[in-house]
Image (cartoon, rainbow, N blue to C red; front, side, top):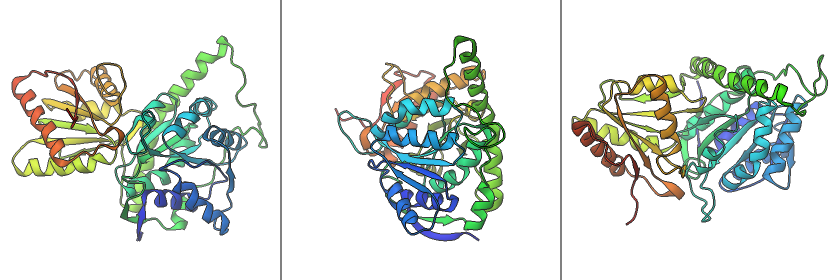
Length: 392
């Protein structure tokens, strides 16, 4: 039986960190993720963990600290948001290419400018191609559960992982949550045994050497293979987590999609609002459904194509702009997934919403479904690149 608690998303992630007891934390504060190292530093100060807590002068240094520690054979963690994640970007590519399974908690927040401390996904989407695994949470419970699964997944494929939640919406809001007992967490996560640490071990290796054209491309192919391999690992770890807690996780969640003619694809906390909209429309006799993406990297292409194969029209809700003049980042991935899997019948549109913390209401989502119904009826998409709740 789990332990019932009331925690914010930041508290929940910090508590998961405490239960795992990592070796090193490279820490630099930035709103809205500041509370994570703040709470965790109290665990360090109280002697509840053995972690070497290293406060540094920037997020770039925080990630550099994690790279050095993980390369030496330690479990390393950090937390950040927004411009902090942007400052880490150079070293995030290094962490991924060096195949270091660092765990990074991200409280998603709008990137400047103009300066904004509220939630959207522009920070996470800016590093989507850095080679990191990326899991997104809808609720505080999912933020906690995702973090407990993170190291198992990352270490199995030797890739770093980002555990993303929505800044303020889940990071600071307090919800009921069920915690896993400490002994079960330790057994589930296990010990870290790197195959080729930089120091110690039977086969120490150099980390991050210069790669000539003779070797560089092969190293990238191996990175790509690891990302592909992560698909099955996420499913297996999610299944084992479900056996332990009763909460089983996959790469996507299909909500009331059994006979849906219109569907929304969405990421993060807004899925909760969208589910309420789906419920109300279902009560009115509308055949609507929702697909929530949990794993953005690896992208669940086959699962999404299968889920959308029977619908007539769908909208992808992006909480970030790509500035490519035709769609948001998740829409681009979804469209590619459908094409690659020969799912060409549904008509799709891209919606940009919630930038800089703009609230999304149940009525807003219902408006999207109304437009999808019209598209399904007429078989005409009209403008496929739209903004939701934009002030005129």
